[in-house]
Image (cartoon, rainbow, N blue to C red; front, side, top):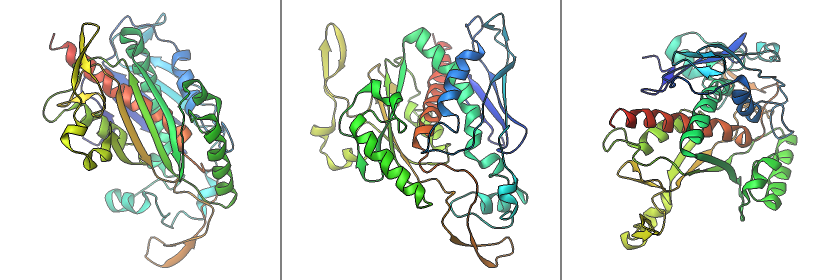
Length: 355
């Protein structure tokens, strides 16, 4: 398979290039009679869309979604749902001068090696712009999971460069440009990002995702462990370079007696006293919070002059013009939340087939 489709029963296919006429997603497997409107999807797209603040790209796409199929009178039909948004604010001329140069940190060379052809305008299909289609599909999964199980996926920035969040206030996440749950630290993070942007550079960091009230029993015990599918989904986002669950790498520094989550009876329900594993045991969820953290690299497109070669291997320098994110984390969060939701939705449907 060419790798444009994700999922087993809740199948998501995305299509479109960064500077093409449009982007879209086709979702197959959504149950029928589920309430769904364009507004449900638009809410999530607005959280990801470019042009939100100074820390991100100045590209100002409306990202207005249109449902083409699969919904009638505000309810899903059980047939493929086709969604589309138009690209209206792309500036392809910004890339004409560097079309034969390989941009450091990008997939240009890899695409030439694999396909012998590429869309040099903003990276084409390898651009982060593609993730808008994932958010469309994720919006459906998020609504379904919350309506059926009250599952909520919280995403927030916990680190930008060396600046780390200390406190957690969920209400503060959507009230600052960094999407940090620590309002005081958020200001320091934003200041650093703007200073880095002024210098023509970019900066990375770490985001955390807390899945509250996840359905229990999701995941298969061998190859399709829940964390394995979540890991694949998150690693499919190009800017993510590391994924950990629960204590993650910290568990490597502990003894088993310190790392194991002991079981307790809480109000007549068996649960764990700690959550070092991050809510998944043997590849299967037990209903406790699922904790995921991802490492996010700095955006590759920067205004600083860098060394490179052209398509013939001749040494050159490059300065990537155009409008780019100085810190991608705030706009990555809705994308990662969407991929998490898609995986959970897929496993919910798989679990239903066993009942």
